[in-house]
Length: 442
Image (cartoon, rainbow, N blue to C red; front, side, top):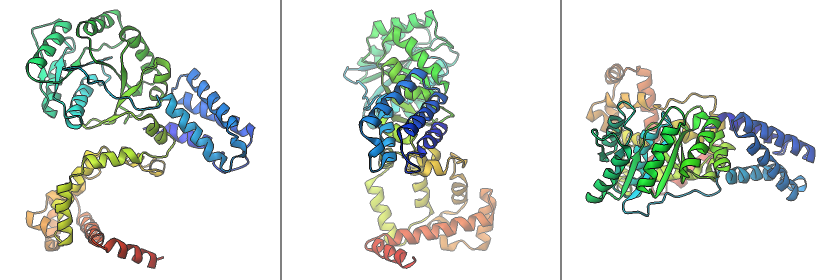
């Protein structure tokens, strides 16, 4: 996410991080490079210029040149201004109606239908709502079927009327169905077009006027860069929507849309899509995104994702197993599944301060655990619960069954043994003993 922009900003600010003398001249030169990096990331030129002008004014106003750590202060100013540029504070979603009606809009191919499902899943699991998806795309082949597939995947009902060709009538019927059947949120998936046109804008405007939604969201593909900002402006002139959803932020995006859309359209980014899974949806926090862009990581989001997968009862059971030396491969497999639910590996690593930069040239497979899972699935139940049973002939069978080698099986067994010992040491006062051992190894 924003790797290229992060790298260029890091190089631009490097001279002010304690390397070389800090002067008004090299502050200006650095900000010139910052502006160039933003423009290269497809940020609106006027927005990029205003951004660096504001940072320069604040830098000189706060005596950056004579500060104890001028480089760090300069980075903080850039981070604060990036945060402000992207909206300042996170914006919530309006769920005041009964039912609350959310109208989804956007161009074809922006990921609108998929994100409608992600949003329904988010509201169901995190806000304990009962959402209904309404299929109003009567033009795109199989659009209704696609929404039904998405609904089945997340366990959310989909309302559709294949005989009705008027999207306004379908949306009204969908809301009536929601009221009659106890749904408290209605998400209306509308048709998109390949480009902004009068027919499309009139249709979405008619739906908006008829249903008067509590929330109108514009879905845009972050990979389209400045075109995304221009499209958002065209939609906003007609719809006056409430917020933006940026999809495909896990792809090869330059970041320009995320940085400049708020300043151009004056509407907040409310959610971002960070992958293909239904759980790959995040509330957009400008401050956290600014930190990630500047290579500072995002520990808060990482902890939040971990907490979502944390089950206190399961943790207590696991603790007892470790204490009794009963931690097996089934438990290990369960831990892997929880990590996978947190998101793709490269995204998670990018949240660790400094790790994103260190790993930027390393290709991380999104399914990095597949060989480990294959090896464990090739074990018998007895072998999983008692790994000491695994001898040479069993290793050969496991390697053949998992499509791996005996060497890889040995490697996993060794890593599992080391991890089991470490986890055992962390029980009770073991953590203290381990720290003492580590000090002794220096």
